Length: 46
Image (cartoon, rainbow, N blue to C red; front, side, top):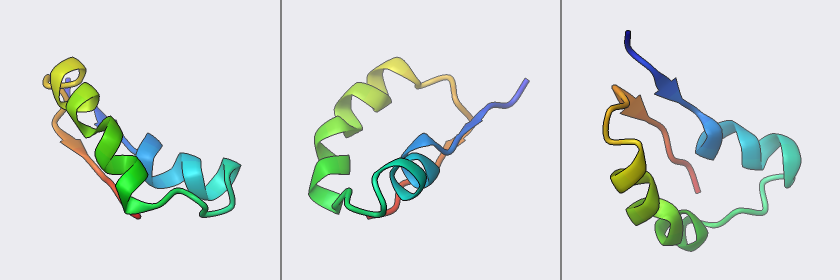
């Protein structure tokens, strides 16, 4: 099965009123890369 995670795209828009900046997403990128490597695609907006 292919899994698409849109947490980084949608969560900050819905929950934090677009206050997440690119630098914040970059801080979490190593964790996401290591722990979600099986995902087909990820979307990141900042």
